[in-house]
Image (cartoon, rainbow, N blue to C red; front, side, top):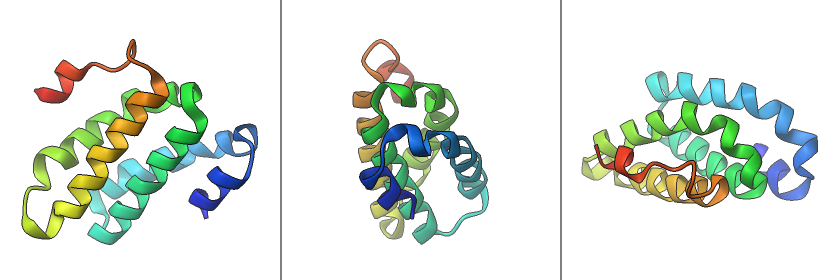
Length: 108
């Protein structure tokens, strides 16, 4: 639903809902299933790509969770989730710009 909304509607129509989605994502990282996490990460990547610089407000809350996934999803069954998280980080980086992204933090 959010993925469809992000692509079909103007950013101003759905950005107010993003705060709730970010909160839910943080909860899902702790308790969600692999399939749900994959879908949520894909949706966040799409929203970041669509909202561009407006996504900067969510960067600091989301990146630690995505970094956690990248660092810990290192088994064969989690490789798709890890790949989606890496793609999401890349799209968020493009959306918010180089001045916000700390690539050195991502490597730690």
